[in-house]
Length: 243
Image (cartoon, rainbow, N blue to C red):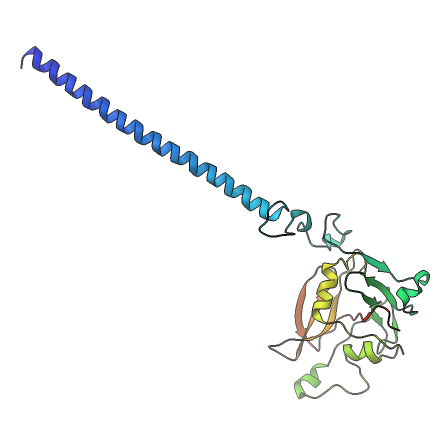
């Protein structure tokens, strides 16, 4: 092969190599551009997800991180300063115990208008006390096993409120959702003292096992069912402006 042919072959190979390199460079540029677009989309999605829950997004109104940090109980400490809470009125002699005239009235949830009693205390709720509350059961184990009603001399939590030995009228046992709403509205720190954690019976029966009743913890918001033979605390409620 003469010199001229070798030169032609070399030039041909060089041209093909340059063309291939140009094609690969173009492909790499395209892939790089797509990678940059993908990165921007990921960052945008990350910001969208953050904004959905920090109060600036429109996806979940009210879904702010300021209201979703930790539960109100705050590990037995004071309520978080950035928690969601509505207004409460302490029932004192100065406001005639929220207009009830009853020293057993503890606090009024201004949002729902419900007035909450101090916890029941003593046999058949003979009194109300936040410092010395008692726990109560609906039935005892033997009664449940025998499937018979509670003895007339022993009151259910519902009866403790409506006709307990405290001798007051107008009180009733709250439903599960009334207890849950009280927690949402800031019962901890307004109704329950900081550091207190108690499960309160509701007047709501479990739909899948009627031997169970729902209870709610007003400090942590936990709601669960338990056998009515188990003991829990009792707070009563009444609408405002009732005596």
